[in-house]
View (cartoon, rainbow, N blue to C red):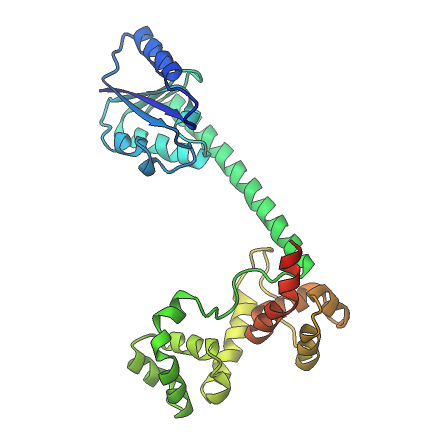
Length: 293
């Protein structure tokens, strides 16, 4: 089977010019197009399964031929194009592009070309990653806490176990152990510990102290932030002074100036990883910083 694939990204464009090019290419090779598949007014950034291209790819068989006006008609994203090429190679079908004059099948030339596309895609990924990292570091330097709030009440976990909120408090007040509570709720004991912290019951619970300490140590030593390659740098900030500064509406750069014994990154990471300081900061200076944007 020989298929012709046509795609235009806006309704103002016409697929006829592409169709003429595909037909001329097929005639040049002595082929006849058995079926045309078109996506009109559809962006190339849309997943193939959400276009007519998806069903076409799934019915391709060994020795089938797919002709497109150019490789960008398959997709605008290099990763997407690579996935499509890989899929077609596995099926044993060949892709031809009219304008680019690419022939992509299960041969050395096609594999070299696919490798070139893959290398280009990897370079693009690295550039995107670098730009993202730079953007996150800029936000971090401004004093914006990255990520979502610790223990966000709208998290999936909080929603799932929300009906246990009052009962959990009662079990905490009774000083039931984490495993006992986990058996009652029907979850993991680590989930119990997170819920206790999220709903602010940790001060009532004698089992919570060691877990909180170990959790912060784990975050400091093992978790790697999105804006750098090293683990968090947690330091023993003067808690009372830090809370006073936050409630006064100071941003993290201003708070760091009040604590010259620590670097800005240490102050930032400590506030970021501490659930109480994180939540408090988001209620004060964070709101002002976000509004400025």
